[in-house]
Image 1 (spheres, rainbow, N blue to C red):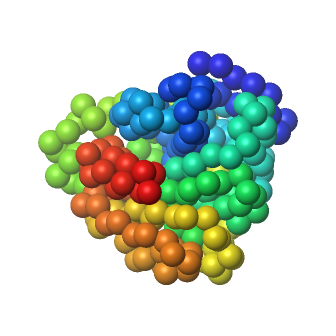
Image 2: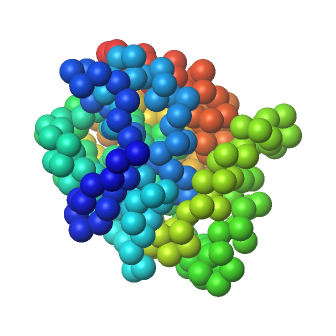
Length: 259
């Protein structure tokens, strides 16, 4: 996969689909990489030019060792668009990726044609929780948080019935650089978009997991209520709903993007 210099770091990305197709940009969750979208990208590439990238501090993208901000993460996405000469994109982000999507739709609405916000929140967790997680990964590495993270990402039933689906996702978590993870935790800790998102005018789909303990369904309902005209879809899944319920996720995404 290629990398390019954008916003002061090397960003790893992958493009699938015809050059002439409309562009769909996909942004990963905290602790994963662009391969979290593999199942969706294969199908979507038949209609879209699918552009996936590893968020700063994840996958093969560089991980500077300092706290990040959502302005920084948003400008990474804009710089990647500029480098690839993408004037306007449809943007789909899950969890942290959805928070980046909210920032983009607020600050550069002319670059976003449609917005999909999945399993995300306008404000995510308490300061103490993020500070503890930062301290843990810096002191003990990514494997120290594996059990608690996987329990939030997938329902108990899915964990028991589909271990082979979970293995590569666990691998992504373990491969995430601790300093990159910590930097993104700081960005999530410090952002609150609950009121600013009411300014978003971009057509928006909000997808929530009915069994999501990380970003509960009420967080999806709040986002949908604040963004004018937003559509809300609930899936029977925990946090990584695109992995746990790929068919239902694809149906929701496909129906919206067609519209």
